[in-house]
Image (cartoon, rainbow, N blue to C red; front, side, top):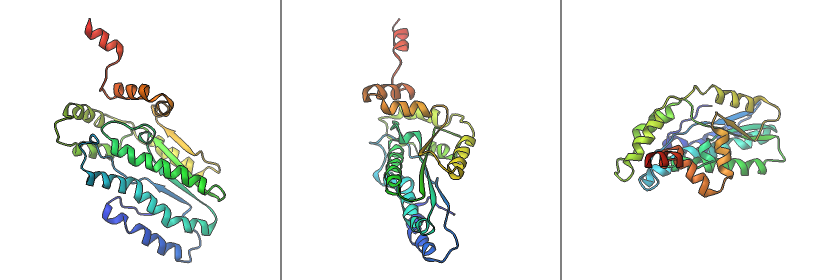
Length: 231
């Protein structure tokens, strides 16, 4: 199915999918993959709320419209599979992409709720949680950095991370294929070398996880580096 992530298009998904559901199709969509999205960079205080609304509308509400539109057809045919592409940023909120994390936390939440709501059906809900892979989502993000002065040093550091070289998303495609074809898919697929680190950060005490995240993106130095500089 074709899906556009542009806001002016996503509002038509519900009506379009309802028309499809009311038709006498021999079979429904066996698998839906909600993958459309973008990453909005910037500190929470620097991002215009209109842009934040667009982030949430595209990454969270558009998949919800798609799900609501096609679930009746899946119910009609007795089975189906919905695969939502989240992120490790849906497990750990990362500084300077906080609104992106908010959209992915939301996608995780509706996926978890929906999975329990559909427990007595043959409709499976799966979440894919990748780390960073080569994708235009990050190259586009580098062109959207806010121009406010309060975080410019951090934005320059973040820009280097955004423009780093990442591996091809082959592992993500493999996870999606497995989630779509295996008879008993996992609820979650962590993908990427650092994905399990993000899962671990989620269960650590907040003070410790905050400190480790700050070190990872260069906001804080490790105790060893501080000691070395001091001597």
